[in-house]
Length: 315
Image 1 (cartoon, rainbow, N blue to C red):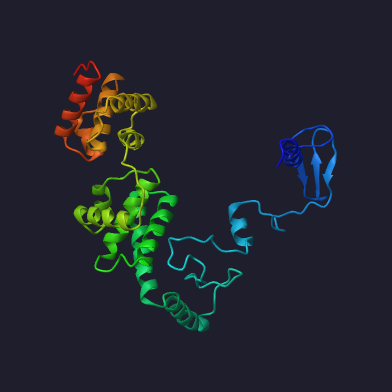
Image 2 (tube, one colour):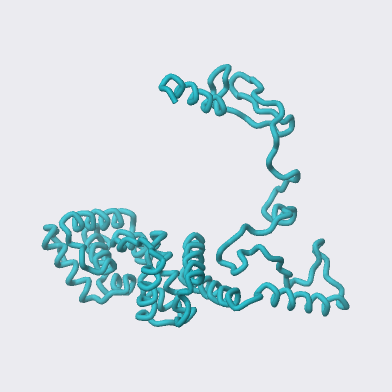
């Protein structure tokens, strides 16, 4: 493409979002008339505009749920991705009326066979158990939806590569959740994952290293800064202290004081120093309980940071 032709193409793209008459970008979609109108000069840009929304209206969340004719979106956290039919347990028909007693036995049998049909082979049975375990652990730890979806994808890839053989389902599920936390920048320690799961910290770590190597997961080391917001929230500290702790960690990283040390310990020490400097003091025991490290670790790290960064701490 020549240089003279490029600006013309750019103009064509911009005309879709602006009025050709006055150049205004304030365009309104009038769904009653099916028109696209410029708010500034009133020019009708398109008179055969198609409404992509539903033909019904809803005035609250309950009405929207009742009138919608589609199910939940596809999700990897369910073994069949949520695409199969599910018979509810409420014993009510589509109009909300109670089902007659004589029909309930038949509905119970339908429900039972539907549940059996959804899990047809060993792989699906494995997935159903593992993904329910993943959801249980994530709920207990209060993890967001994107972490659950990522963990489910990692576990599915492990199943496809036959990495489950010889390992416990719970161990691989916990390792997938730990990898997902790191991938989504929602850091959780191995101890926190182990507490929420039914397997030991050692087994989760070993399985995680194996999965990361086999699936070629490119995960960067966890930064101490990632832990600061959560620790601040649990200690009920202000945003000023959070900003101060991040600043201390940035200075420490510039002087290479964070390499080779546990990120939670360094984050806890920076937070302890920031709480003293800003006048919202927290004890070493309080910070240690939230960070999951010992008081000795915090003492060693904060003395090191204070000495190397020339920070005067009045205890």
